[in-house]
Length: 87
Figure 1 (cartoon, helix red, strand yellow):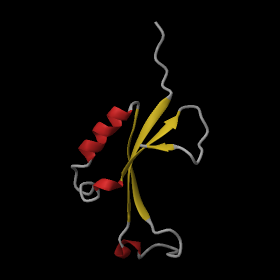
Figure 2 (cartoon, one colour):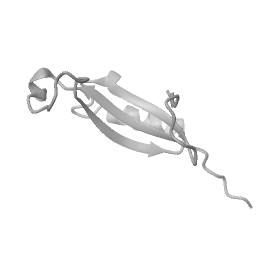
Figure 3 (tube, one colour):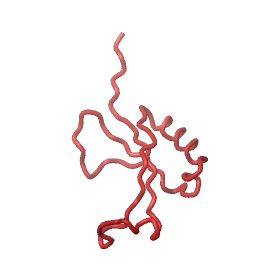
Figure 4 (cartoon, one colour):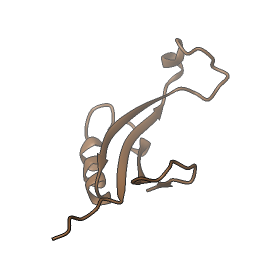
């Protein structure tokens, strides 16, 4: 019996822009505004990533910024490119 080969992973992140008072220690405010990015998890299916998103969205800190979640699909053994697919 052949094992199923994983071809894609689904990366769940939460990325929110920092409030102005949170940027007081930033080196150069002329660049893009600083953000706070958290890796929630890496999953073998979109369904598992969406389940994790639903659970994380109820937690303190995340529930205030529900639109800051993103699931990005990465192909295994493929070089990174700018056109990666976001769900």
